[in-house]
Image (cartoon, rainbow over all chains, first blue to last red; front, side, top):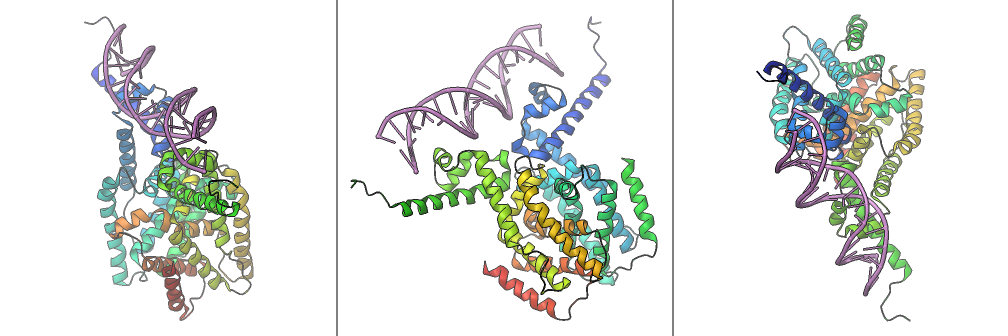
Length: 233
Length: 233
DNA sequence: GTCTATAGCCCGATAGAC
DNA sequence: GTCTATCGGGCTATAGAC
């Protein structure tokens, strides 16, 4: 029996995970804003309320921390995003859900999108292999769905890769370029109503380009569903 | 009469401008890739073939160099881009030219687009005032043209700001996310043909969303014009 | 204008006491 | 696990010889 009240193993482990989570959250925000080279371990540790030396006790190095943060973002991105393939949904509904989810991610996790953008712009000096291993299969799966729709005549033929590239650009820009939008709109923050307008605009483009019929009333209904979903967070 | 052959003032000035241009070109590339904090003056100087101390003779500080590079990019961006307003062009032709020019900039000056993206993602810590002063008027002018078209019934009504946001995103992504596209397409570099496909895809979306009639044959003709234009550089 | 030298600071990472 | 102390190195920027 020791004199100091040492917490049981399960409590110590929970405490350790809390600290690690706090570090990871701060690190994601900082790396997303200033890039790998623009952040110091000191900055992250101070924001997380610990010392630089303590941070380097939980994570062996700055690079390891960055790599962990980036892969966490990539995994949460890919797992929260249902693919276009869904037997129960027609192309219009599937694309509507896809756009909604992508915009939702930009609203809920802007720093995740920005971190990814920074890494891609920098030509992925650190995580190229992780990105390739995880993104190529997702890309192939989504492209296959679009190709099938086009072969069936469900949607108009278009270059599938470029459809996806432009679609990703339109949805992720609401996280990556939010500062510019706030400035041009004269707002302090993007609101759920802005994401509704973004969604309507993007859906309109897809409907027009793919020759999809615009459902008579569903647009308004799903718009309200999205507003609820975005407000929930 | 001095013993050392001192070049005349005009020659010295030309030499100075050559060195400054070389520094600016290298600095733009480096800052665009790694962000302000990810680059050292040493790196830039070495790439430009001079010493760090010489670089700081031509530019007073790293911040001043960055600010100069960024404003050069912003100016060349805005001056090379004809606005949507052109009395001789109908909405369809004006938008087609606009998209073509934006994609052309992404092809010709990818590092300019990436530098801008990095600054916006970082919430513009250095050049916020410059961006606001130069971008707000350009945004207002383009929005005014779209609003006029919509008031006249020339194009379908859509949220003008979001139309521009998504349009910028779709065109700039071909510079900013080129690394990802190369990976997913299995190519070593994006080629003019890829930009042709991008252009067709984006134009289709605009035609559909804005209810613009698709000219019978002009699509193929302008596509070949663009291919020539892109190959020219 | 370019060189060597260096000031003054911040960085990531480690060592060892407690 | 957190602390103080510190190493070795890179950074921006300046000083002064030539």
